[in-house]
Every structure is written in C-alpha cells, then in structure tokens.
Length: 242
Length: 242
Image (cartoon, rainbow over all chains, first blue to last red; front, side, top):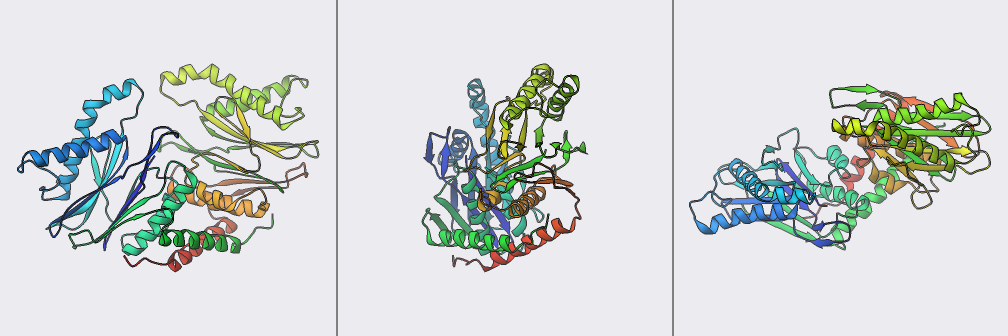
C-alpha cells in the first residue's frame, strides 16, 4: 500500500508521501510517490500517487512523452490553469487503463489508482485536486482542506481534529507526520522514508523538499513527544466507577 | 457499518459496540450488536457482531432454537468450554451462509459477517475469540489483547498505543470510548448509542452493562478532555524551521 496526504491551506500547500510499494506482503520495494514539475517563477505542480503503480507511472510517462514531442501539445508544463492540469492527468489515466485494464482484470489484478495534484500556476492561487481512478476529479475547498490517498483510515482522525484552512504550514507538517506515525504503527505496508514538500503560496518555486528517513531527528522528536503527551492525557482522563 | 471492540485483559473483559446498521447511507436503523448469555455463578458469554445482519442474527437464532428444542443438544448454555462455544457459533454461521449465500451473491449482496465472542464458563479463565465469516476462529492471547470488527481502522492506532494485557478494566473502557470517538468523527455509518459491558474476571455474572447515549455525561467528559488534551500536546510539539 501507500499513504499520501495533500493539504490546501491559506498559507500554501503541504505534500507528504511514503515510499513503499508492495505486491503481496513479501514483495516490498521503494518507489517515490511524489513527482514535481517546477518552472521557477512560473509554476510548481506536485503529484502524489496511490494504487496500481504501472497505471500511475504510465499516466505520467504519457504526459512526459507529449512534452518532448511537441511544445504546442497541452502538457503539465504549459497549461494555464490547475484545472486543465487535473484534466490532463485524469485523461492520461483513462488512456492507460483503457489500454491495460482488460488484461489486468483477467488476472484479477486491481487497476485502480488515484492522484493528488496540487500546485500553483502564475495568475492563479494555489489549488489542490483529487483525481479518481475513472479520471474525474474534485477540488479541495474550505470545508475539506486536505485529501488522502492509499491507506487513509488510520491517519484520518488526527487530521479531522487538527487541520483547517487557517492552519499554518508548520502545523500542517506536524499533523501530517503524526498521521503517518499512526498509519505506520498500524500497517506494515506503509513505511519510511517519508517525502515532504512544503509550498509557500505565491512563491512559485520549491523552497522546501525533504526526504525523512526513519531516524530523522525531527520526525523522531515529534513521534516521541506525541506518544508521551498522549499517554499523559490518557492517564489524566477520569475513570468511571463502574 | 458497525464498530465493535472486545478486550481480553488480566482483570477481565471489556465489550463495546455501536448500534447502527445501514444498507446504503440512506437506510440507517438501530440494532443492538451485543448479545449476552448469562447464568449467574456459572457462565457469562457475550457476542458482538458485524457484517450481514441477516447472517449474524440467524446464526444466533439457530443457536437459540436448539436450546428450546432439547436440553441435551449442545448450546451456548451448556457447553463446558469457551472453545466449544466458539465452534458452535462458527458452525451456525456456516449453516446460515450455506443456506443463503447463493441467493445473496446473485444480487451482489455481501454475506460476510464476523463475531467477537468472549466470556467465562466456570472452571475456565475468561477467554476471547474472533469468529471469521468462514466459521474458523482465533483466540486473543498476550500479544494481541483485543479484537475489533466492522469499521476498525480509524480507531485502531489508539488501541495499539494504549492497551496491553495489564491495562485495568477502567483503562480499557476509557480507551475503547476514545477509539469510538475517533471512528464516529470519521465515519457517518457508526453511531451512538454505545453499548458497554465490563466483565470482572471470575465474577461469573454481569455487574456492569450500560447503554451510553450521545449526551452521556461520562462519554461527553472523556471526549471533551481528550480533545482538549490532544490540542495542547499538538500545540506544544516543536515546529521545524523549514
């Protein structure tokens, strides 16, 4: 499995993804789930992907090939809105699935896949989309400032509790790391290293991109202090006299 | 959906279940997921159920009918070990599924269901089982002191963090209610009232059985103080200077 979070906050965007992929529990490998398309001063687009790896990789391959073939063809490098970028990505996924799905289904292989796509193109504000397996997509608005894909349930309660549109980028990162910690503790198939990208609104460049290993000092500190804090709060809760 | 937790602790057993059932999000009704078989001084057995309601209800109906027909027939009221009780329950589920599955599958209706079965029969220590859809079952031992069924993922991280075999019954109840709060916040199809049964080891009777409504003062206090405590710990965590 995979776990990825994208947050659309007032101050910018936060992207976090794990880097484990598996086909059965005995075949675990590392693949980065984050792709970045950056033209400094003009655009930053980030994709996070979950689901069938051949589908997500090849959807991106299709988009890459089109760029090199012809500068006039619509691509993630030249569309003028995030909406168009989301549509391109959804269409590319449809193309790959139409090409492969029949063969995968014969072997009962799941061909579903999802993308989180976020970023900013000069002239727009930062935007965040969730692109479904079927190629359709939705945008994060005020009520739902984040999207998750992959193994989403373990780490959802803490996001629901802590994150809203007004959260700072640093709060977003903290909360995403806690959400990852909850997921990694409960599910073997999600694991470090964790890829992190923080996009400051209107910067139009990638200023912060980190790969956090298991022993990253900040990650370890957040996880340790969170665990200690939770135990303190838990122990202080009243006990009923049943 | 449904959410149920059973814990097997040194001091006894804790059972918690929600009471919502739905066939699609627009058909939500209340059904108690907890059944109690008590012969004070001799046995207490508790079942929690999730999945297809016709399967779990009728597995219990089959067991009930056998009791009334013939006192010699093996039933939850006369078996001499929890192991035999788990096998009876699994066999009853197999019988119902064999009878119904073909017709359900024709309509793409999921006939899977699971039970948590726990309790104590005089002469044994308290025991806790998870009975799978296929009728096979496993027992909670030291490493895994709890079972969950239904919508299990949202509320799993807090159990993994807080509960071990040595936890007190009051800690078990506190943690189960927090686990329910996380699940209810994240998933519409799980809801109060929450049924709670605390079984003290070797008591061989039900001393504590409560139905907690949304506005139960203890439930509200635990949820409020937990939420406030989590926000305090979260705010005190270090922020990285990215």
